[in-house]
Amino acid sequence: MTRKYSLVIDGDANGYSAYVPELPAILVTGKSIDELTDRAREAIRIYWESVSIDRSPTSTLREIEVELPA
Image 1 (cartoon, helix red, strand yellow):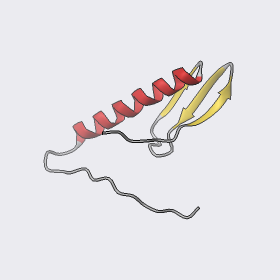
Image 2: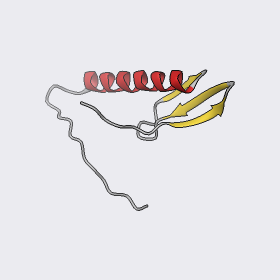
Image 3: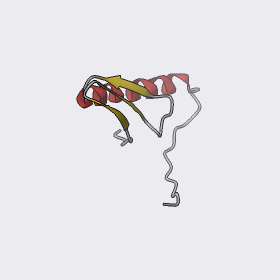
Image 4: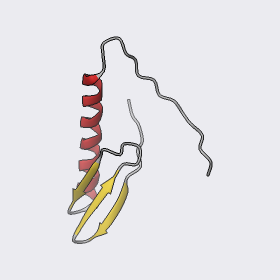
């Protein structure tokens, strides 16, 4: 399954930090944008692995879309 997430990035050539608005628990840092992006991908993957482990065997996961005002 592929999902798209936003990555809000702050910083400069001395270092970067970023968070994923859709998953507020995820905050990453890196020395470059590429390193930051790789770390964010890994953090998101680990987040979803932990969520699936914590779910009960009888629960289901459903994706929904919500339209928000611009």
